Image (cartoon, rainbow, N blue to C red; front, side):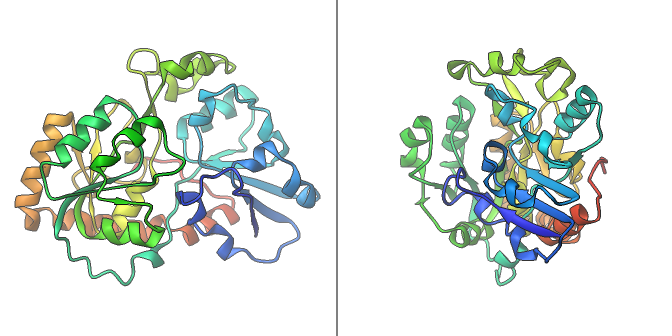
Length: 320
């Protein structure tokens, strides 16, 4: 399968620049995979491959792209679309009367962590943006421990900019970021995102056809949330760092990993603080969970496995 990328719309330094799908590309005249959001908006690469019998697009933006006036016909030019949102897959297949939308995971290249000794002097980390009050309060809780918070200083929202004082590292390379994650016992993960009133996100969601059929939107009005599996989960699992995951109405992570076997839930920020204290002071009792997740990741969710799964026309459509 030939793999081509156009990352011109991806913020420099973000994860899409490091998944390395193109490293597994093989010469092929029938099957081609494109990735990078610009492939939806531009036909530059598509024009060069439109004669292929099987044209595939790998999409990691669902369902966030529907918090804009997104035209769902943009991907009609592809024969298959692999994406990380199981609910959007079901919805789009239903309203378009097709089966070309496929569920898959957000991959990670394990070579970034193979040389890590996994000495873990830090209790807990978070890396990424600040997207509301719960993130601010989460940072305040983390700061009570021996923590790491990694952030970029470019391409970030104003709230993240306002809280850079919490950052212990900024503008790390991808490898440097993974090195820090590997030095932490725990990593905090929210597998959801906020529906922003100031950006009229709810109005934009409602502009999508038959939007109520998409289970990803079921709490958008009441809770102001939508689900999205985060790449940081696989990154932490690859680093033998224990994922602390916020429990939410979807728990989309359970499509890939088992609670208590591969990760630990927290129910609110008070619970998060208690879990960090308990695990950091009793690491020997929890380390096996991080080890199990590491093995499960290597056996199932690397970039190479994803490449072969798509090449063989397979998806990931089950809960464990």
